[in-house]
Image (cartoon, rainbow, N blue to C red; front, side, top):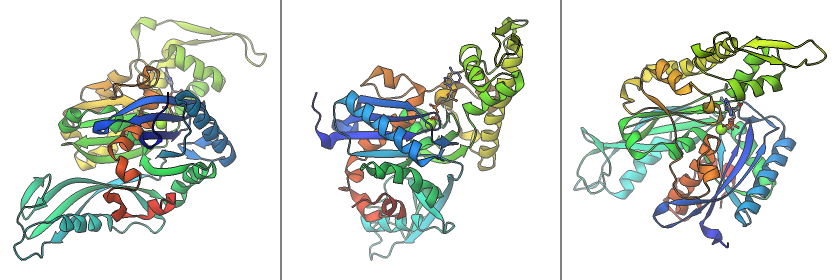
Length: 407
Ligand SMILES: Nc1ncnc2c1ncn2[C@@H]1O[C@H](COP(=O)(O)OP(=O)(O)O)[C@@H](O)[C@H]1O
Ligand SMILES: [Mg+2]
């Protein structure tokens, strides 16, 4: 199959557990069809950030090569997902006075207020990743979607700003560019996953997306259809494995195996008294562990992760606005009993999220590990002209675009 290169969008996630490249073909109506995928285990990443450049580069090269083969195309550019404990989000409101004689709001006023919204004072070493437009307000009228053509003297806009440390953001960008690949956009993984799995309706009702990865957990709250809150915890499925290893006195690789085969996020009374017996490791005698113990250890860590997210959301009062519930994705969400646990901690319904693209390779769409990369493809399809430097984003050249070295 031959695809028109211009419509090809590649989402790249350099995760702690895996590096994956998902290839999409943008069709009419900004919809993307998934046409290829490459995924390899990750060796150079800890807690979502590159700690071994050479290994990370090798893994990116391998994932991209596999994706090229799978989609039968040559990949020249990617949209890159980023994460890490340095990434933060906050909401900002900017104000702009309308100076036109008749007081009619024009495109220029909207641009001006958006420019101001981005013009926030961050620590010098930080860079904005996203300044997501929420609602406008004209004079005292709140919640305006499109103010152009309205009359008013004062235009305000709410934005959700996601930012991170420049040098740490630059690490994965540089690895990709070393491979002669262009980075077309940098997107926070949590935002990408939310784009992949949350429906418009869920976003309107208010929903919390949690992406449980290997070394990080990203979360994004969407309320009233707007991205309202972002966070990253430097904790994920690997910590669950580590706790099992310590708690059950077994090796890390065996702990991972046990987690995948017998793990549970909530205690299960039907296993009471059940045990698992292992052949000896390192010449020690046979070893058996209680399933109940395994589940208790996993429950403690996963409950802590959810509690930390809850605590992060509480001051902003967002929990009360989440009428659509909690949606879980990422490899770490595969553990049984996880939705019950989330529902208990957040006090609202919780469900496994589903990637909301309905066309393309089912082996990609059906897997929670791919949510970020699929979301990147969706982000690219919805913003194709901007990503390819042909849309209004040209006017908002910010530091991050300088980092990725776009024309
Ligand atoms: N069936 C399962 N039960 C529990 N954890 C799982 C299961 N399958 C995968 N995981 C965990 O998911 C994590 C990897 O998820 P992934 O989303 O690929 O991470 P990342 O995006 O950080 O690379 C690992 O910690 C792995 O142990
Ligand atoms: Mg991930």
